[in-house]
Structure formats: C-alpha cells, structure tokens
Image (tube, rainbow, N blue to C red; front, side, top):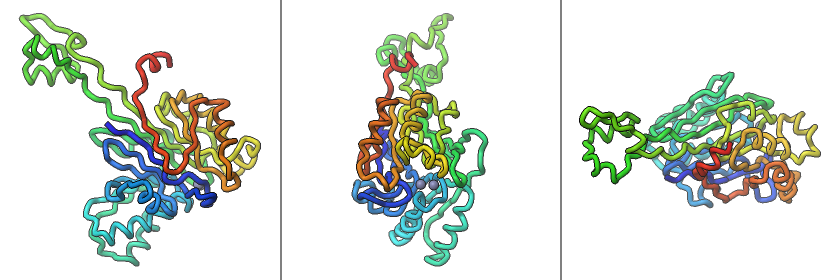
Length: 314
Ligand SMILES: [Zn+2]
Ligand SMILES: [Zn+2]
C-alpha cells in the first residue's frame, strides 16, 4: 500500500532561490492529503504530476500567508473545473470567514460542498479525521499565532490467517473472520490458539508534520517512534536567538526533537530565504540525527515499514 510524501514547497515565509512556500502531498493508498497550501501549490502539483482532483482533505497548520494563500486559487480551479465531490479543510479558527469572502465574490452557487472544520485549540493531541485506513490527529505547536501539527497513523490491520492452515483445519468463513479478530477456534472441544493459525498484521506506519514552531514536539508521546518526521528548521543554530524571537526552530533543535522522539527519519524544511545553499543546514542536523534529509521540492519520501528487529530495539 502506497504511503509516500511529496514535497511541493519547502521555503519559509518568502519564495526564494527557486523554492516555494510550504505545501506537501501525503499519498496514502492513492488518497491525497494536502498539507498546507502556500502560494504556487497548483503549479507545484502540476510539475509533480499530482492530480488536484485526488485531494479531498486539506490540513492547514496556521493562518500565516505562506501556509494557505494558495487555497483560494485551488478552490477557484475546482469551481471552474466543475468539481462535484466534497472538499474538507481542517484549520485553526479563522479560515471560514476568509474563504466565505472569496467564494461569495466568485460564485456563491459553486457546485460542490466545502466543509471548513475550524479545530478548537486542544491541550493534547486529538483525533480530527479517520477513515478505514488512516487516522489523523492534530496537536498544538508554539508559534506567534495558533498553529497545529498533524499526525497520520495507519489504522491497525486485522490478523493474517496463514493460508496453509485454512486447508489443514478446513476453516469456515466464520472461523476465518473470528481468527482475523484475534479469537481462538474450537476443534472437537479443544481450543486452538489464534497465534498457531495467524500472523501479526503489518506495523502501523506514521507521519508527523510539525511546521512553524518552537521545538516542543518531543513532548507528545503520540509522536514517539514515528516513521517519518517533518520538522521546520528555519535557521542554522547560530541564529538560535532569532529563531526564539520568531517562534521558529534551528537545525540542531529539530534534530534533537527527532532524536528524542526516536523517529526513523527526519526531513527538515521551511528554510529561511537567507540560505541559498542548504548543505550547512543538513550537516548540522546530521551531526545530531544521522537519518536526516532536506525537504527539497520534487523529492518523494516513501514511508516504509520498520523492521521488527528495529522496533524491538527501541
Ligand atoms: Zn511559515
Ligand atoms: Zn508562521
């Protein structure tokens, strides 16, 4: 099952050096979740061959322009293209009135439903979306305005019945369903243990998205052992004071968060326009957390199943 992150935009407040404001597509089993929607997102979708029509859920971290000014353009395109299916946008409070103004002027009778879910500020991570395949939690970050991170986790799958056992025990459909749910079955008055007939399901893969924040995400237990962590890293560490004043994170701090969360891989992004060359940021992160990468536009990151041995070592 596909679980892959595409970086569409990874620069901080200003577009610079060919880099665009923040936007990402998280593809889970061909469902596209759009994370933030900075200016230029539609062009970036096009450049990456990602179909905008596949997006049904959008998650906005906060209402600084570099994270949502592309939304109005995207919605306008949906109206022009005659979109039918519902679009749901999750965001901190305030987005509904902004969207309403634009839609009323453009076309109050657009053909599709846009549901804006203004999430109330939570004290701890809270579920905001779930399907049969994935759960999404939001959690409070610490920025100059209300800002949320999002955590995507696959739903736990049922147990796998071992094929050869179906024949060996002549299992009925009802028994297979019971085994998948973790129950034992009975033969001639004797219980046959579930674990003799089934295998563990695959691990639940996860992705944590933390942008525009002071380095606080390591306080959330939910994010522990996540497979992939995106963390903003606006500045090199010699700009630590500036990062603190503007409620941002340095590369060293982002790497320390990844280490404390025991993440499998870290991607750093939201780079300040002052850096043309990003190598020093990567080197600083790698010195603390080796499995770090830059959120370069056009890059894709597969979210892989971690090896059992690796999980046991954690
Ligand atoms: Zn920003
Ligand atoms: Zn911001």
